[in-house]
Amino acid sequence: MKVKINKDGKAKEFKLIDKWEDVTIETYSKLMTFTNGTKSSEALATLTELSNIPKELLKQLELKHIVLMLEKLSHLQSQEDTTLKNIIEINGVRYGFHPDFDEMTLGEYADIESFIKSGADKHLPEIMAVLYRPIKEEVDGVYTIEAYDGNIKIRTEIMRKMSATQVHSALVFFYHFGSVFLSIMQLSLIEVLQEMKTQLQVNPLPTSGIGTE
View (cartoon, rainbow, N blue to C red):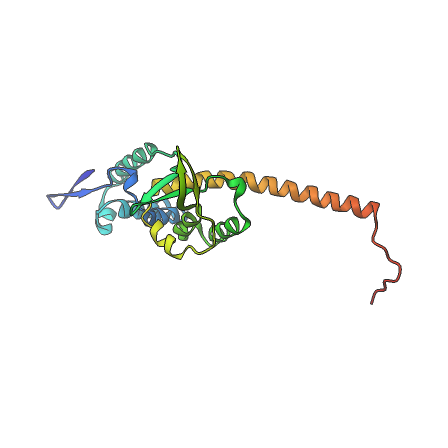
């Protein structure tokens, strides 16, 4: 969308994004980090990334104009389609989102967990490279993807072409799964420990012939 700004008696036209789908994964990564600062710095950084208005000019604008632009951006984001994009196409290649988290390997989950702990905002392409993989077979919307081998260097570069909307919906879906998975995992661990405790009480370890130093 176009924004007209009057400065020193002269009107100049700038551009604000037209739709949230225009936001790239790199820009989305930066937007995720802006929430760590003050509200004023967050507003300045957000408008700098989502418009072509120079930062110094933004600093000179009245607050009411800044608020108006932020409200327009907020409206665009509210219209964002948050439905998970199971299949995306980049450079003519179709990539499928992991079709069954129940079959996710420990290696896949461990790599994603590592990227998140290192800073999800810095590793969005890597996370997407784990979750999205080339489709091997597809019939009536049902598909299988390539097995995960941990080699995501090339695919990470490809995933940099994803839009923020695609990334956001995938992260929301995965984080929901992750919270449920961890709850189940913790419950399972508790059950295992309780079972071990019961077994040790019923069948205590033999002490005969064993000494301590």
